[in-house]
Length: 596
Ligand SMILES: Nc1ncnc2c1ncn2[C@@H]1O[C@H](COP(=O)(O)OP(=O)(O)OP(=O)(O)O)[C@@H](O)[C@H]1O
Image 1 (cartoon, rainbow, N blue to C red):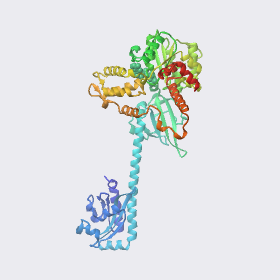
Image 2: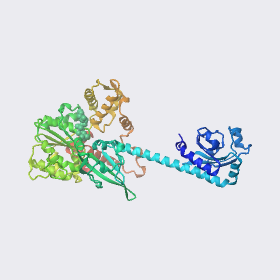
Image 3: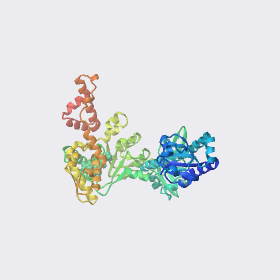
């Protein structure tokens, strides 16, 4: 439908007013020559099409106004298929132009002698009036287009904020809600649909909430919603344009949800070394070391990229240790906001800070008493808590927030990270004394790429596990996929393999998993890996700044060593792995590292 048709009523009433003031007939057609409005003789032809070879068509094509005095031998009239049935005597036509496009025409026409006289004697004035008529229609259409664009923009913003895994509310200057995402509606648990919340004052929804910019800091709040109290972690940001506050963004999440994501408790499926798949020599060596470590009570440090099985090892060690009947508590230091880690780890006494539970709370250290505490992503523990953790390791006592008497605890610590902790120590981002306390037994977990011979074994194991869990018949991967799996670099390690297989099991229709069952992102990644150069790009060497071959080789060697140190860590264990990979003795590696 054309834009003109959308506002045909408005155009018709304008045409009628002009016609009665100027005493000529008026009509409007759109770009498909469909008559949208008309007076007098034109009125009966509304919704009819004008001839393709009419003067209207000419103005639409050329975008230039026309004044036609219908001498019957006029060239345009002669070729028009209306021919003798046309009663128009004179007409002036003006294009309607929006964004450089001719979307229709407006026309004044005479059908009798009096109208002829008027159009001839006031030709300029009538043409000017016709131009204004066209312009007023143009303005109307431009504003409709703008509203459409705005609505599209709003729909896009709603799409984006709905896909965010945080609760988002946006307020206008009057503190009325202009956007709210579905997660926010779910967490607030209010009895309104999204459309009914829009335009309400935020104070109608959250009774005791003061809208104030929090300077990018996350605060804990107890919000009153329909006589309920909701504990949230929230942030408020003013959105400023031209130094004026135009709107406010509230970004929040329920505290319970955050803590559930970050902390996993001992689950019913007891994980043991039997659950760790790997026949490769590197994996067997780590498993053997981990089994020995499990028998002692020393602190263990697991180093490995994401998805290499750090938590799997931590649980297996716990279940093979004398603490196996005690609790296994895991906490992820990276997912908890800084201001919550301390209370989560150490607990607090009743009434020790605003927002604290009146009963007080026991922390993860106390929960893990006589068991194992797994501190995942330890590199993300803030410095002030590193000091507190050091004290726990040294004195085996913890101080609850707000308490003056320390509590004795008996916990084995297993910590893990994918970051280079030694590098962080060098940069003063991690306490050296704590690093040595945690690193009593280091275990470096190999990436899946480093143990290629385990890829198909892990695949088989995971397919079996998932098919059982999902109640599906056993499946297997095609030869073609086997090859792809073997050549792929698996940056997300076993977790990535699990995800790819879970997707494939869901979508494959028969027992054999083929390429068409694999997720698109994975196939794209494979395509990228296949085109990636593995050696130095000789073509990229700058011929104008050549140095001696020895110098360039040293440079390249240095880069390789730096990359491997970042990957495996600057630890004795890490260096041993690097020497093995590069097929050199450990002493040669140390000499090279010293040289560089
Ligand atoms: N060797 C393995 N054998 C069988 N399953 C494994 C192995 N390694 C990892 N997995 C599986 O891969 C998934 C990821 O493992 P896990 O969570 O232990 O990795 P992670 O190193 O702790 O990851 P992140 O650093 O992201 O926390 C889990 O489902 C785990 O069971």
